[in-house]
Length: 148
Image (tube, rainbow, N blue to C red; front, side, top):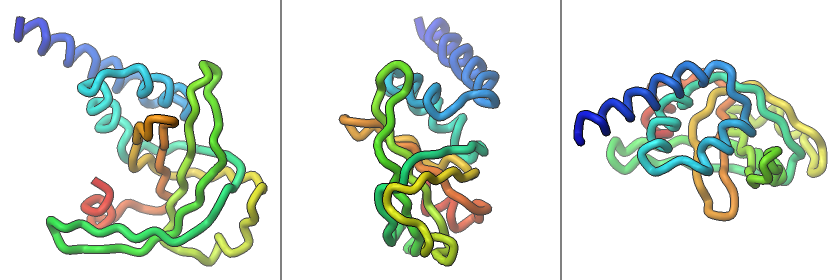
């Protein structure tokens, strides 16, 4: 039984890797919504740090502080929340853009479209929606520690 389970996990992991290069945010959200806890961990690992283009309508812009209690490090970032969207399969999701530099966010207004390229740093099931966090910038070792 353990061998069958291990083989299933390996097949799922390989299929997810092969598919990860071509997946869109709505496809990822639908996969995540219907995945088991084990499958979600695999998806999170496969997509962490993957480059994507995401878009939405600006809902709000504000500060966001990270703190890692294990390593006692913190970081100040700026979060752009996009309005909730739906996949073609009617799964609600929200894009959260995270930036280190606020200078190019000062001109953003609520209700304006936003489209940015970045790396996936988190996928969260918030019960009423799936949140996909996108970081614009290079992931340094500090960010890797903070975002895990």
